[in-house]
Length: 177
Image 1 (tube, rainbow, N blue to C red):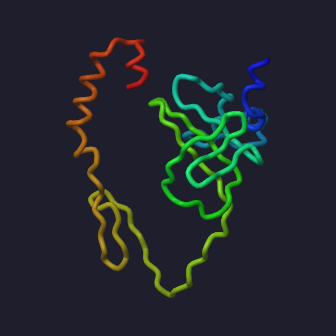
Image 2 (cartoon, helix red, strand yellow):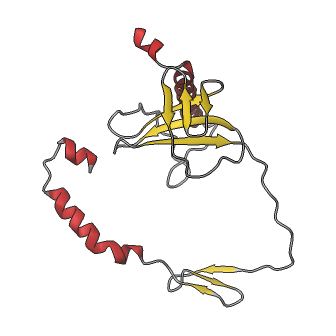
């Protein structure tokens, strides 16, 4: 239990809150108090799953457990972490989530509370028809073609599948792939 003192209290509390919410949703679904989320909309919510250390990991910091600087984030009991901003934050963040993906890359995700801007009202309206031959057709006659991403990437997919088939099953490289 001494290892619990090595990390900040906020991520531990947040993981317990997430577990409580998942358990409540599961049991409410079993009792019929809550609709499930399945293909048909009637299947029950799945049992809460424990996090795996093999793939994606995350820790959420709230309150005073983090401070944001110009090019660094200071996390309680972790220290200063250098950060590269993809864009500016529109307001002060409510919480910060540090995410580590399976390729050992780290990302910081912020929850920010903003007031949404309302667009000016206009008398212009348009209908949209989704189709098979064209992706969308507007009522004013404008057509949008469907993106052909699968067709463009079939050769790339075949190359990766061939490479994947040669990797030994159960090995560390197969988990990375």
